[in-house]
Image (tube, rainbow, N blue to C red):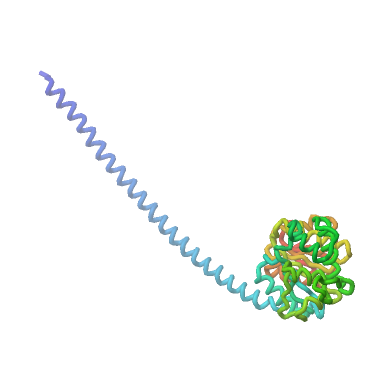
Length: 313
C-alpha cells in the first residue's frame, strides 16, 4: 500500500535526478564554452602579436622617412634662393609673436639669394592704435592735430608709408632734434618697434630703406586689435600710395589672420602678394619665388583662400 513515505521518497528521487541531470549537462556545456573561449583568446593574442609587429615595422619606416625628409630639407633649404634676388634690397617686417625659428630660416634664405638684406623690423604688440595711451604718445611724438583713433591712424600710416617707400621725402623733425629721423626711427625710440641688424647691410635704421626696397611681412594669428588697428590700415595706406607691388605677406603656420583679410578684400588682394604656410619647405620655395616675381602678384599656399599651391617657376 502506497503511503506518505513513498510519495516523499519519489519526490526526492525526482528532484535528485533532475539536479544530477542539470549538473552533468552544465558541466558539459561549460567545458565546450571554455574551450571555445580559450581558442578565441589564443587567436586574438596571435592577431595582436602580428599587429604589434606590423606597427613596429611601420613606425620604423616612418622614422626613417622622417629622418630622410629632414636631411633633404636641410640640404635643399640653403639652395632655395641661390641667385634669385641678386642685389635686390629686402627688409623683413615681423610681428614679435612670430616664431624665431621661421625668421632665422627666412633670413638665411634671403642671404643665400644674394639679396641686399636690410634687417628685421619687429612690430611690438604695444603698437596698438586702439589703445588711448598709445595714440596720445604717437600724436605727441609726431605733432599730430589730435589723438583720436582716426586721426592717429591716418597720420601714422601716411608717415610710415613714406618712410618705407619714399626715403627722400620721409625725414621728419624728431622730438629730440636728431637728423634723419623717420616714422620708423621715432617708433623704435618709443619701443613700439625694434630693429635687428644682424647680417644686414647696415646697423642703423636711419640709413634705411634703400630705393626699390621690397618687404616681406611675416605675421601669425595676430591680436584682433593689432590686426584691425595697425596692419590693415597700414596696408590700405600703402595700397592707396601705389606701393603694394613691393610687399609680400607671409604666415608660417597658415593661420587665419592678415592673409585671409587681404585675400577677402577686393582692393588689397589686387595690390599685395601672399604666401600662407610659409614655414615648410614648399612655403619657403613659394616665398622666395614670389618675392622674386614682384610686382607680379600671386596668392599661394594651403588655405582655401589661396589661388594655388605654388607659384609658376
